[in-house]
Amino acid sequence: MKFDYKKYSPEIIRPIIPVKIKYKDRSINYEVLVDSGADFCIFDAQIGEILGIDIESGEPRSVSGITGVSENYFIHTVNIEVGGWTYKTKVGFLLNIAQLGYGVVGQKGFFDKFLIIFNYQKQRVELKRKD
Image 1 (cartoon, rainbow, N blue to C red):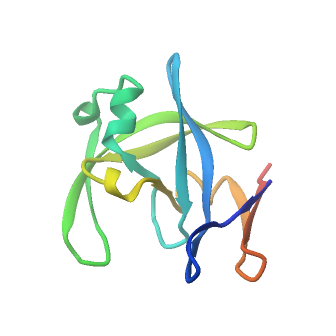
Image 2 (tube, rainbow, N blue to C red):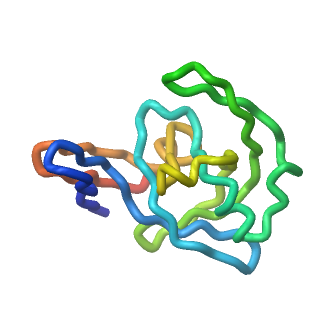
């Protein structure tokens, strides 16, 4: 599966890909940043609410980013569909990241499912399923 980087300006491109997040009988299309520096998959809490998930009933954890500010998120199990392939994984739902416009897929829950090739020169990211 090959995905072109998303262009934000002449200087800013990012490996953002479309996925479908599924929970019970609901699903939503969502864009995610393929982030090799992220430990886990983290999505905006509003996405979970749309799927009918009681966000704060999940396992609480905390995360801090580059600024060092710690924030709470809540773990739930969902299905993620990428390029027609669906798998079950645990993800975190974090309040107030909607302003980014996308979620983050990281080491656990994404990189452990695929061989990932970043090609900055071609502005493309390629995913190969691990079987």
